[in-house]
Image (tube, rainbow, N blue to C red; front, side, top):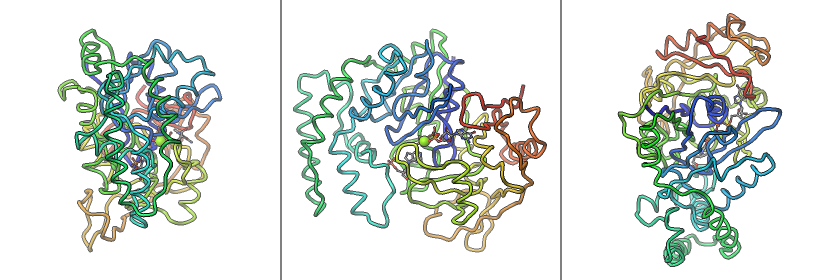
Length: 424
Ligand code: GDP
Ligand code: IMO
Ligand code: MG
């Protein structure tokens, strides 16, 4: 057996949560491999909307295990809150959730460091979700971090105090940054006690044993390829590898064990936070897409920046991830348009290019747009792709031709049921 991977090809919020939930019945284990509570994955079914941050999106289906991998960073406070939100739905999370002993912990001081760093950056801020993601991964690579396995150790408190003292020392350099650590520590310690009641495992063994036993595994990405620490629009990125390779390091899966790679993208494009966005529509068209697509962050509520679909960026993401199939999300958001635009190339310093270059931060990038006839009709009631308007089918064929990968799912609404398979 191999591990299938599902990940975002743009700047996050492509609709990963929805599709993981749709695909879960085909799998035995859903495993998150990176990121943490900066993610906000939305699922909708039976009239209820659920937002997950650290918990994998398979949690609502019975008989499926949900693994939080070693590459994930966990905030015990937010994790506990997420668990509490499951209680009214009688989700047996103690049985369905498994956590890697090697996953790193977000400390209250990591969140403070994130906030202090962003404030100090002023207009150059990353636009972080302020969940402490960057500082936690810094401590991981700096070899200072605390891991889930440490919470069972008799000297956990000692390790915690050493790291906090280091952080307090760093915070002193941020002049005027005020905080009340004691207030944050109470809920954190409570969160640690809750974590202790969950199944902590050697997740690399857990997953590889499961593969040997013929179990089907889906790895769930967070953020998107253009936010990857290596390949994204650095420095306006997150602090983990959001790409397929992140599955190997974030779960302990060998590259030869990677199966299908499902790349998720919106029929247009969005970005939340700072950083370059070549196809951004800072006008009434962008405003209309935001309104139609309800483009506000699932984690922070911030308005998402909107723009046309960006082919050079998508091709880049497909290449880096080895995408084998594509899913196009939020097609219905474009229902009100008679024509839509596709960015096929960029012009940078007078040169026309169809690839994603090193620098898009400090140069002017002019998108070359191709106009495409749109469907201008309501897609949300469709139950079969066969009945889709010709213009939507043509848009799918056009994208498949330039992206050279089949589009297997077209999503026409947030609900589980509003999902059209194109190849059946
Ligand atoms: P994720 O982070 O990739 O899981 O995506 P988010 O949950 O942050 O953002 C996607 C948003 O779009 C959520 O509010 C979803 O409910 C919603 N959504 C997903 N697919 C569709 C779709 O096909 N049409 C519409 N209108 N909304 C969708
Ligand atoms: P999902 O999984 C969209 C963005 C932030 C900011 C940058 C760094 O829901 O798609 P961080 O908090 O990681 O230090 O922020 O990355 N960002 C996301 N944008 N979707 C996400 O996750 C994101 N997670 C982080 O807005 O620009
Ligand atoms: Mg999201």
